[in-house]
Image (cartoon, rainbow, N blue to C red; front, side, top):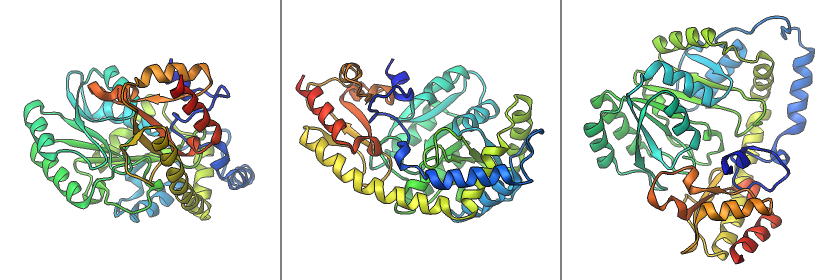
Length: 365
């Protein structure tokens, strides 16, 4: 019930959702790009797009990736409808039923659901705003022999942690030693203030990189991509074609326009600044409410919050639905025993007097 409410637009206030509010989106720039795409002779309304994705977009993505130190030819960049589709396709190629997969805890709730559909055995490693215990990480590799580790490298959902250079080096060293493939989900990377290294910058032999624009540009026009080794890219192309996964060239052309004319970069910079300002205000009223912030301050889309002693997040979230306040309890994102003590707040949706007022009223009840 709560997961549905987080995703469904029913007019409620949604501090627990995972995307930007409409008022934060670059509406004029988007409409201009849509009109330009409709006028262009390159729009092929009566045909399928190229299986690998719209070539000019992949060329623009190649330039964008190079700023992260990821240098690949366009043949190794494959577009997908969203990052979850990219991850799902990779799961089909990289794991078989019964294989062990390692996840961060907490993490995006759909990952557990998706891996269950693939018959994977899931183990987790605790991650907080400082990262993880890499000795414990290695012990999990030795004991459980996972074939794959799926992680946010930057602005981890929901703690906001990004891997440091030393952590990246150690993770890559362990992955090579233990034959572990890493799927690096960098969906939030464009919301980062201070640049941190990407795992894929060291090579794609045992790292696959996925990212997209649903968290920054618009949640509804879903353009994402995967960056893979040559062998895996060829296999993904075949699989994408076999399961009807040819993506919308129309949406890809719109995204390409905004990348190429600089409007996306300007929007991303504005969004980073707004998130920083909103994060300070939201963190301040959460502390006033008796909560404590368990995420990195000032950066990214989310604040991971520990509730005052004695409150149960899922009970609070169910009560919140009665007053049209949609919260994201920690039990959606974590399997640990203390998950019920946490809520995840979306900074952009929470920087609103009505959200603060309803949350305080909810705590009083």
